[in-house]
Picture 1 (cartoon, rainbow, N blue to C red):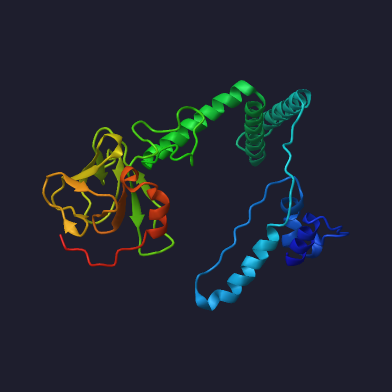
Picture 2 (cartoon, rainbow, N blue to C red):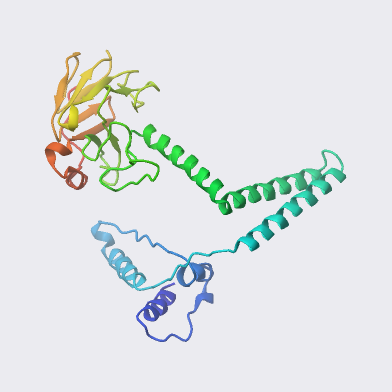
Length: 310
C-alpha cells in the first residue's frame, strides 16, 4: 500500500509514472477504484497521544501526509433517458419470467421459493431505479427521507441546523423553538474520547422534561432517574436557563449542590449538572458565553471532584 500511495502521490505532483503496482496485494487491488478511479475517497488516520506510541504516530502522520497528495477526479455518471427506460423494461421482463418459472415449479418447493425471492429482489431494484429516474418520485422520496431525519433529530433533542453546520432544504433548517443561540447541555465523561460528544439542545417554549419516561423530551435511563426527574425552562432569546426538581428519590446535582426541592434553580453558563448517578453535563448558554461551542468542546473534561450523596 505504501508503494502504491507513493506512486500516486508522485503522479499527483505531475511526475510521469509508468506503472502503479495495484496487483502486488489483495488490499491494493481492492482499492484500485477508490484510489485512482471515478470516486471520492476519505482516509482516517488513527493515532495515539501515548508517549510509547510516538513512532507509530509519526509514521501514520507521514503516511497520511503522502495520501493527501493523491488526486482523484470524481465525475457524476449520467445515463440517457432512453437507456434508463430500456434497462427498466429489461428488468421488468426478467421479473415476469421469474414469476412464471416460480408458478411452474412445484408448490412450496425450494426452487419456487428461490425464484420468488429473486423476483422480489429484482422488482425492488426496479422500484428503486424508477424512483431515482423519475424527478417527481425522487422528490417525494427525498421529502420522506427529510421527515425521517427530522424525527431522528427531534428524538435526540437536536436541531436540524445550528450555526450552519446542519442544513435542511425542506424549510428554515431549525426545529420549532430552536435557534443558533439556543442553550444546550454538553456531556462530561471520564473517557476523554467521549467528553463533549453528546449534545441536548434546549429550545424555548414549554418546559423540557428529563427522566426515564418516554414522554420526556430528553430521556435518560439509569440509577437515580425517575419518570420525570426535572424540568428545564429557557428564557426568551436563550438569555437564561433554570431547572426545577420534580421526582422524589431521584438525584439532581447542580454545581456540586444537591437539588431536592421543587423551586426553580438558575443554571449559569458553564454550570455542571448531574442527572441521576451517571449522566454529567455542562450547561452552555451561547448568548452569555459568546462562541461557546468550540471553547466548551475543547475544555470539556471530566469533573473529578466527589459529588455529594443524595
